[in-house]
Length: 315
Image (tube, rainbow, N blue to C red):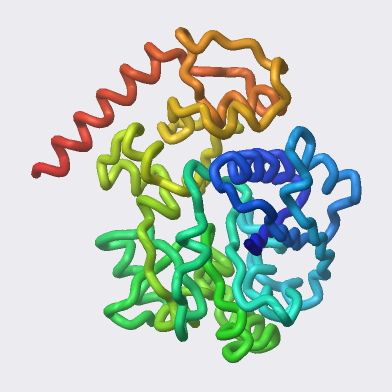
């Protein structure tokens, strides 16, 4: 199974967490992991696999320059490295016909083999949409997308490399970015939607790219998520490993991933008192934060929020 990630040094620990969850959730005996970056050292790469069974991975570190994306628009959550997924079909080995791109700020709860092996036909991508209503309409207008298309989130993408090699070159992609930079607030995600919206197969966000908004909109319970969802995505400004996180998806009780993503015994916790908050436990161990919510705090907040959302949905 071919996996692609792109990152800078700020996402080393979240990537480590994602890979921990991947090897626990999916029984694929060997992953070919392609790490696209501009400045990671050998020590950085080694630190990603601290506590992980590295024998499950063939690791391919690919150092790329910013020659093409030097003028691409960036902000706090959209780095130069983010744009590398646009040109994966050119820098990855020619013999690869498909690869699964996954953002580092994700959690794998259940096997992803069905997603990886899905038929893509003439589609360049398979991805999930997180937008609805007015936001979806605005995206269509500003990117001139066809009415029957959907704006997808680029954090989880099944990529048909053969088909992508028959589409745009790197130069064509970045020429488009140069001409439309003022209209691309979401960077390469906007580019993918503008240029590939008719070449994208849509997949379930509840199963393959579940973010906070989708979870609230669909009213999926944590029990359902833990049993059915393959990939949880902590997109947006607020991350579980940072102060100020106000979501609920970090408080999954399954404890299958994040709490095993760090060395055993590095944090003592009482499972009867503290939820097996996978993301926050890792954040604590990794030095990202020192606050954990108690079960009481979470249950009060979660139940109130669930009832409110259910009420709104009935209106």
